[in-house]
Amino acid sequence: APVDAPVPAAAAPVAPPTSTAEATLAAALEAKKVSSAASTPSKAKAKSKAKSAGGGAAKGKSGTTPKKGAAAATKRKAPAGGGVGGPALKGPIPSLEDPVPPISSQDYDNLQALMNQFCRVPLLTEFSRPVSSLHPELIPVYSKVVKHPIDLSKVCRSIRRREYKDTRAVRLDMWRIFANCTKFHCHPSTREGAIPSFVSIALHLRDYFNALWEEHMLPSEMPAPPSKPAKTKANPTEAAYYESFKARDERRKKRIVATSSTALSNRSLERVASEIENFTDANGMVDGLDGEPIVSPMTGMESADEVAVKEAYDTVVVALTKLKEKMTELANENEEYTVAELETDLKRCYSTEVFADRQSLRKKIGDRLNRLLGKIVVPIFETNCRGVNQSSVWACMAACIWARESSKKPYWPALVLGIMAPEDQREAWHNALTERNEGRLPESLRQQLEPGKRKAVSAIKRQTTGKAERMSFFLVEFLGTHEFTWCKESDIIEQFDPEADPDTHVGGPQGLKKKHHTRDHRINPQTERLRQKAVEEGRWALEEFEMQLSDTCGDLYLSDDEDNDELYSYDVLSQSDNEGDTAMQDADGITDGATNADDDAI
Image (cartoon, rainbow, N blue to C red):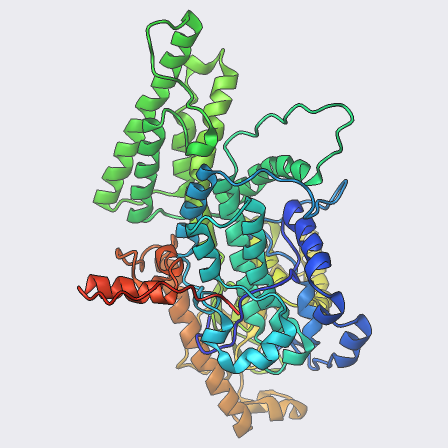
């Protein structure tokens, strides 16, 4: 995210939640703490403020709200495959009045592990501190829009000091951080300075947090529901908790499929080896939330069945130990090893014949190793879902190209955000990329793009019957203008060369009709300046994309120094400003007896 842009830090959910529990609790929080009249404009007001996009492409200007109206951005979908899409709400709606278990010491341990991982993502600059500290000039406007501000450092301090009474409060505070960003950048009063890409970043971070929560804060197996008297009133929050286990399995499968071809970095291989070692040392527990080990230490008083279980589990330990050694060797030799290969090797560890008559034991081991794999895959998946800063909606790019709306218009630098290919050329990631980026577009832009998408779908269908020329279609964002449209394959040039002018190879200005002359950069000086800006954005996009491709696991540029302030690590964020200063002074051998005052968020 651009460091000079005004991203706030927290309040009531505005963007669509991505799980049953989040949706219902967020609704309860909104009703209880936030005035709906102050948060979202009416449909009539939103409609009156909407502007026509014009032209053949849907428009969304970089650095401002999309031209169809700021309120439309509040209708965003969760990014498809982007982490945590959930089923529609069914049954009673959970509320903040539902009783929940108190937070345990193990919960806090897992929370710290979760936040350690979350705070490594390089997108937290504008969420890390109170807006009053980062952008004091915004306070007059920000305080009118956001009624319940909060920031990441405050949440981290509360976790470190163990101030939360239950885990629900932690989730609500984190959701509020991202919801406040969405609310501020979608509010009518801030449309001149709002930045649509920040809404995408906030939703991306929310999805990442939710995915980490599923793997860190839910045990490997769903616990048995507690027995209750027949007439006990149902607890909707408790019901949503049990539903979340099935939803987690489905979302985990999608993440593994999406990252299956990703090669693990050396750091990731080392992490796999470490996680396997911890698993075997704990006798089959991923962490303390798993409750009890798969086998207990032998005392010599075990039954024959217990001895057989121990022998079966020992075969798993032997296989896991060999796999751990393999990870170390791969890391040392810099050999390629993918997520799909890791999944296969983990399954082989408990797929032996000794489990033929012990399916319940096999399932228990499988559930725990699947969670171990899930914790490793979530950060990799997050990395693969990051957008590029040159996109006005922080979309994920597949390529930088030259594209045009039709053969009558000049080529222009563009990003490929979606792909619709003939069936025999279609790949699984095409649809995932398209859905994810469509989910980052405001509702109004998606509606404008629907006719073009329907034409592409219809053309693909005609190709299967031989009634149309075989070609693919691409969802593109034109750089500079930040217009969006669907292009056919014949209207793109795949290799983007900033030094080239592809229009010189298609007939020059005389090849264009007179009414299009004003849009030809070789005739219109103003258009030429805009084109040069677009070309420069294309260069930056290529550079950023190359960095993403070279760091598919998101750990290449991490520092070994966990106290590095630039990383916004959990250790740094959980300290108040005075505590951080004192820690630095202590490191330099300076002590002045300063107190550790808490910098509360505004």
